[in-house]
Image 1 (tube, rainbow, N blue to C red):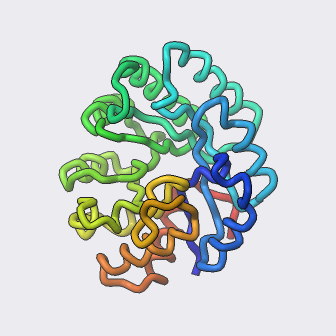
Image 2: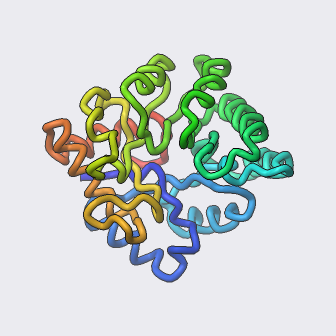
Length: 258
């Protein structure tokens, strides 16, 4: 059984003391590959170092919406420069976040649209962060969608109606993480409405730890708890979930693995 953690910040400082052990532990339960979305220019060096040190960790390049400030143009320029210098497997993590701070909402919209266009230009999937912002995200994606734009709505916790809107794009999947294990998480109640062909598994480590380790630092090993819960919801074996989500992940990211 092989699992891909399609959203992990393994390069974060929270893993500086035990990154190798974290990776070994994850592999014990079949989590052999890791997709790592960038945050901003301050994290790029660490992102690339981890991807160089561990060939099974694959970097994405993008500007996280919570890092969009008044000088976001410099950050966007950094993203553009990095895309010409290094190999990346997606544009992310990008989007709009209206949960923490709405101060730079207009800048977030501009940065998001620009990075969607970079995804189309480089034929890379977009990894979309949409916290408290589905309507705002949809407004922009509706205008930018074409046959070349593809991606995933990371940490999907929306409604059935919002999933159907995503499904209409035909080229987007949804990322299912630790929230699916929460009693009042919401997504667990509607996941059966979502085609298994359209989901990816992710941890968002070191954040959003699933039950039974909620409240502790999240890591890729915990993807097994997410996979178990997803298997329960679909009434399938964990091996079936692993196989299909592996196929889904490769369909989107085209990682250089067997």
